[in-house]
Length: 495
Image (tube, rainbow, N blue to C red):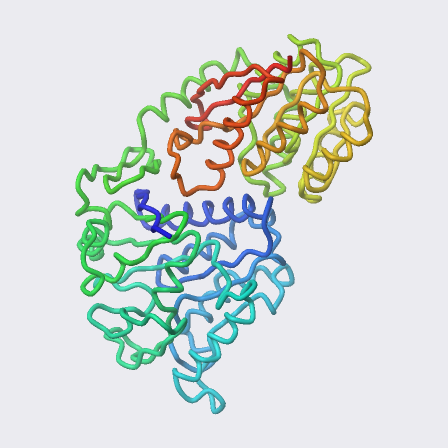
């Protein structure tokens, strides 16, 4: 499988980098858990790596992750006694794992064995870790397939404990190896090897500081792995470099940070900091806010979701008003929503209903559904909104089998990987004239790339292909910009 090309994101400083990496990780875990479990994440040490874990612990969004379905591993470890403050595991426990408490089962934490009488050398620790990896492999695999693998990078370009010029760079058979002569103390370490690192779905390299800028530039320019091991850090679906301005200083086209310190992802090697266009889009949304007129009830639903630590991925107020107006325009009495989250879009849809109208909204997470029910109940909408908990496909199939009254409008804002199947069920639950709205189908332009590594983009592409071939619907896609960035929605009319 060919490696995913690198994407580069530049942040103003190390503090913002750690906070942004933590937010990105939490959001990715929540997204992945909507369709896959368990998840396997590889942690890294180092200053910025541990700062990222600390930011995860401090984030209110951490509660949105089902940590019982997350397994934690390490890319490398310093072979020291248990509890030594220089061990990556010790630092990770203090920064994050202890804070998670019972939410993260003890059995989900897979640390490299520490030096002891029973584990006297790195080879023994490496064998034990390889056995632990095999114990959690699927099928006939040799290890779990890591969903997100975090790597720090040293000024010499090393990742994990794979150092320039060392034989470990060429290891092709072992999952884990012992390093006895590390140029960076302590000299004895245990490390995953490149074949295992490169089998991860997503590899994120996190680096900060001007001293790392030359190695960052060499790695992203494709330098020989023998001199810059970080060149070999890539995932099968995504390769992401998360940098601060200092570490990106030697990249071609580097620019100074904008005053507000925003960030933008760009595929390829030319990084840029905050997009001026993004700030204009957000400013326009703020300008039209009086026209939208977010009611106190909507604001309360939004605030409750934030207080509960739900990810900030709901529609904007302007988009919510659009949904309300569209629902009113088609005279909808029965509305189906796929993807409740905290109930913010649900609130807007419910405003357009007649006295006998209803919204049926489907939500995978029981925790999210509880937040939505409480907020919508406080808004006086309990009689008009039914929140159904469970996998959306199961809920949709039950609705189809029940053969009830068709829906007049369907709004889909859920996992993109199943959009094509959601379309089939939505049409089955519709009538001629039903409007179907599918959100987030442009993906910052990624939808045009047939080889895009993000499975969400591929899910959208499958949906578009299905809709284009479906003679039961007419449709279009409208590109949008705003405080939520560059995206778009599909608008379909059932014939």
